[in-house]
Structure formats: C-alpha cells, structure tokens
Image 1 (cartoon, rainbow, N blue to C red):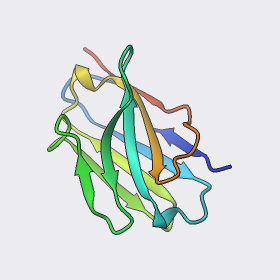
Image 2: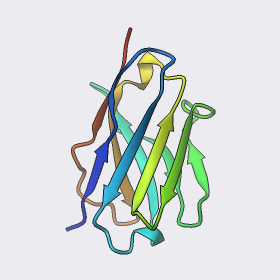
Image 3: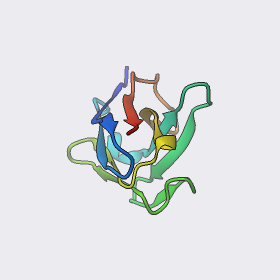
Image 4: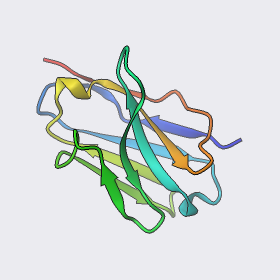
Length: 114
C-alpha cells in the first residue's frame, strides 16, 4: 500500500521559515500530480500547493509569494519551502498524490507562534 511520510515541521516565530519534505515508496511516483494540504484545528483540510508531473505548480492564494513547492522524481520526494510564516499557517501539513490519493499519513505539525 502506498504511503507518504511528511517531515520538517516544527515551532517557528512569525516571519520565519521551514522546509517540509515528503517521501514515498510509490515506484511510479513521477507520473502523479503531488499535493500539499494542511488542516488547522477545527477546520477542513485545504489544498495548499500542487505540482504536476511536468512541473507546473499552483498555489492557494493564501500562500502565493511565500511558499514554494518542488519535486525530485529521482528521490521520490516533494518539498514545500515556507517563508514569511504567519500564525494562520499553523496546521498539520500532509502530502498526497492525484489521482488515486493514498490513505493520509500522519502529517507534520507546523506551529507559528511568538
């Protein structure tokens, strides 16, 4: 069963940066669009950024200009560089593929607080 494992979260002050990573055992990783989602306490999971197999990237309006998504197909990794973090970015961050999303992993907690 395909799994995604997220890492790189932590506690950071407003204005700070974090780089999230996501790895997978998926052998044909490169053909999928990969997504980063986040879920804040009491809120629905929301799509933050997506990168297609050809490298086209889309961002939610709330993170445009601050977050950068990338992928390394050879390493089966996706990344989310998060700069100028705000308290409202506090959430658990998850990655997944599209189509045929896998069971959600545990995610990585990002807390932005002074």
